[in-house]
Image (cartoon, one colour):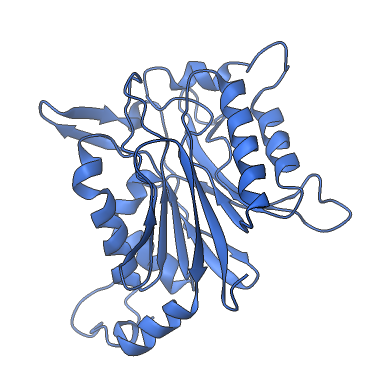
Length: 295
């Protein structure tokens, strides 16, 4: 491990309608990333089922196969087993039974073994419910309404890894600088966004937004996408990306399945924040910021 940092793996996997196969792929890639030295492994948005409001509820309710007798809860246990060697996992199954009637909520979790006596099961550190739902209308390009089947969360989500605070957002959350600012104010040095941008917004804004959030808050930003499947109803952009606090793209994938493995050097966070001290230069006496206080 770096003196001040860790190795992160962004798993850009192909996601299909076979939930059992998706889970098997995720578990296999987690094991592989861990064997290559990853300390944190991030899976894409909706890694266990295709993305799309038209079939989301049916897929959430679907068992993954009689031969495996697995449902969502069993999938989580499989992820537990995969990380029993000590890797932290970001992004577990995104949909569970909702108290909101016919609506469902996207939920992501970060888990870590809690010690020798319970390493096989792990400990849930945090859950994030997507705060900003993807409702857009670009004529002749894409119209999407997550609010038809999903309900939004209302909490900022962070967790700690060996004293390093990490923030979590989901996909459309990336567009909102206020959310990133709140996570930075809470002490985050790294933001991880499981996401699935599409073929319209992906080429225009994917890398731009990653750089913007990294530059605005002077921290690391990781975006992890499903691989592109041109036969899917919703085609993901891919291009999982890691950006440093200088807004440099440190590493990125293309659209195909693969895993991005890279070092997150936290000394760069300190370097940028000391050399360009915007965190203490904000004119909150003149304009309003999220909490009206300096960081």
